[in-house]
Length: 311
Image (cartoon, rainbow, N blue to C red):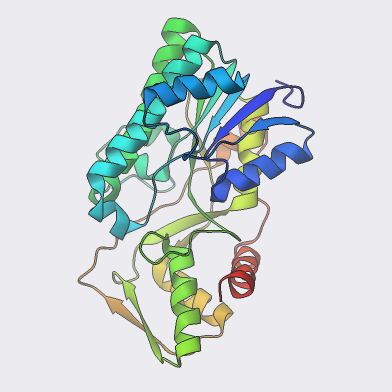
């Protein structure tokens, strides 16, 4: 599917990943891009979804809009995270089908995988257990888009694909201490400690859990390549294939931030999923995607952006 002559609606286009996806589309010559804010169209409201599709008449929808956050936010708002993510996805896919949208690119989440998925996570393991409890409502709500996508392909011939990105990071990330993910949270802790002259920071858990991270520009490229080249019902992982423990991550970020103090582990707080690392072979096989930005390079760019823009 050649995208440069298509009308493309990007939900969540004003957000962190969305801004990079739109930049990528523009670089590839796409001129008709629609990225409305949630203030203009509330996607939880079906009437707003219908109005949005009436107003934009897209050939393709890339659905990035989501209510997201770290472990703390997920534990505080499980009902909100479940309901709002579920309703946005269900209604958008249904209205896209009714409006005759050519292709729907659904962005899922690594949180959809079972808590004890064998490492590396293969797409075929997606249904072999219940997600990690702290983010299960969010993970399951997003996972329903996969069920809907496959059901609609089977019954209506609707072309909807489903991608599973790992945790993203990069310049422009959310550094709000109430809702940020682990990388921006650690960067903020380290930089705040340096500014305030503190010699220790406190980090949740015991540091033994592992994660995989994908630089946001790489994620945007992967989404573009899948949107252009992938048309199958099977879900596809988007990741870097690199696993790192939270302890190693905290130490690396502290070093890159110039924080030389002590890291205190608050073991009264949860670790989240024990391990996360994806099998990324399917994305390369199906549409040629492979992450390019080395992890420390991506971290340096993110820290530099934070120092320049938020400190």
